[in-house]
Amino acid sequence: MVSPVSVSPVVRSKAERLGAAGQEWLGRLPATVGELAARWSLDLGPALPGGSEGYVARARTAAGEDVVLKVALPGNGDREAAVLRRAGGRGYARLLAHDPGRDAMLLEALGASLEQLRWPVERQIDVLCATLRLAWRVEPGAGDVSEEKAAGLGELVARLWEELGRPCPEAVVRRALGYARRRAAGDAPERAVLVHGDPHPGNALQRAGAAGGSGDMGDLGSFAFVDPDGFRCDPAYDLGVVLRDWCAELLAAADPAALARRYCARIAAGGGADAVAVWEWGYLERVSTGLYLLAHGAAAEARPFLETAEILLGAAPPSSRNEG
Image 1 (tube, rainbow, N blue to C red):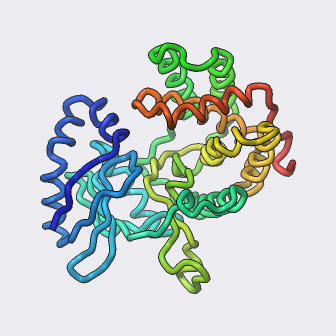
Image 2: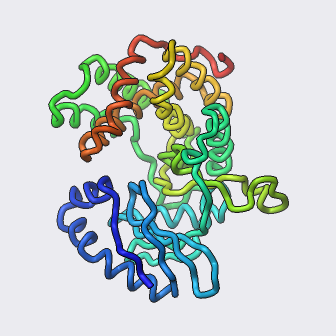
Image 3: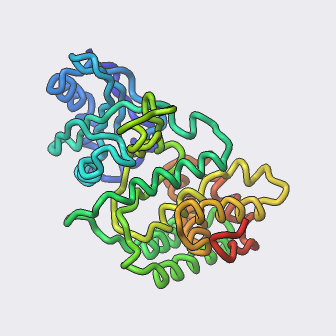
């Protein structure tokens, strides 16, 4: 049985921006899913909501095992599968099968995400940092690139700000570009690890039976990441992504800058990084994410990132990783 195949508006927008390859992927997706269901003997459920990197659906194998089927956007699946295979479940979802010709993966079924659990922010931060420390142990492979992430994000910010009609104050963009230059100059290659690339609360899922787990389950950790980008970079980049979120909390705070500084200090301590680097990566990610979402038609999701970036313009980062 194959349920109706659908993707989120963001996935559709990303596919359409890929041109002919993306249009072909969208057009063939129902057939691709059907072929994979037959190949792997899957009884498919409906697509999972909120995906941004491809088609994702829960499924059950003929043996009764709960799994997740993912068909990644063109060109994304092989790198993700390589990271998951080398991780072997440590910090990441386990890869059960891979079809490189279709950018498709069969993954272990995980539980609720941190986003869904709605735990206090500090607890979510601690989980994300602990899971990242596991994920960073994955050895980079020969094919893993060392991305010039800061320069790339700076170019993205400058281009999208103009293309979108300058949707936020110029001072916000100047600050983001200044931080991009500082991170490009300040991040040392010898500190690079295989980063996740987007370790937000929606990408950290609870392992089934992990609460109070023991043995191997306890060693693997209670949460696992999905959707890794998998490139070499300073670990402070991943921690900046962790700081990037919490827009609702900052917008509701009496002193957003003080709250952001407190979050930054906790993240830097939890990940063993310099707080200034985390702050600068976080601000750059906040602006680039807002503009990126706006470019993909997700205005409601984009606006809080840009609003908080403007609010934090006058804020200074914590001076050390122990502040807070």
